[in-house]
Length: 271
Image 1 (cartoon, rainbow, N blue to C red):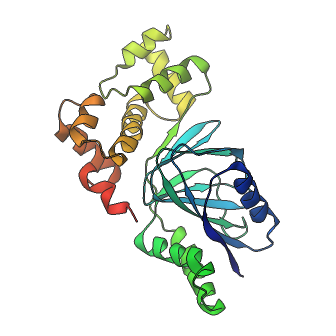
Image 2: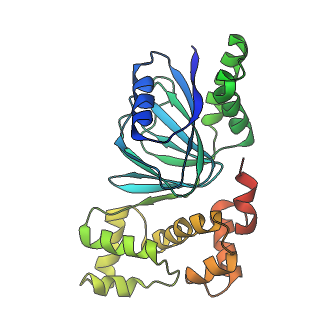
Image 3: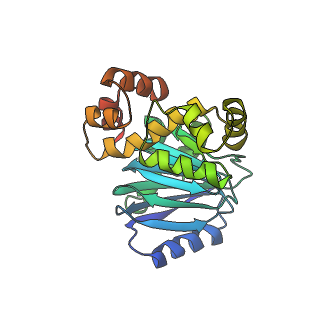
């Protein structure tokens, strides 16, 4: 089994992206490694791959969207994208990405999931992506690839996926919430907005998203806060704007979900 790398470049237009897609699909190799730099605001339209993809944000924040959900990738995280799943991407900030494309016979996935890229996985991927500029022996490359694939299967999953409902009315409320997150948003208020009883709304929300309203609300607050923290906004401002009464409550939620305080989280994962 061999791994092929495409030179690391800045992605500036749609043509270059299409060239990368063609390279990915036409290659007969079981494992491909790719590196790209994207400017803030760059959008990649809906597309899919015949291979399983691990899309990693080494620097910057990116949104990956599908028909049923959105996934946020802060620095040091990746999204496992099943083969055949249509997805689009939007760069929230300048982004340095690295991706692996792996035949489904080697790595298969049924659903997208956000994973934390461990230092070992990050270093191995970095060496593969940079091997076009700094060639390494085929035996060493094979060993790196085999260890990386083993490590990919061990990457810890993180709760950064945000499923969206199919129902248009509920989806409208969810999108509005992301623009103005409120940690104290009331189930009763949402139920009234949709003309439902509290019990009916609770069941409806779980059926549409797979999550309880409280869990979704918490993840959405985190989802909306990460880009602002990545931009360098203060934890105090972000916490209060998200509806938390104090920084301690926001920090407790952040640490419980991501294992680190917000002041240290992104800084520790850049690079």
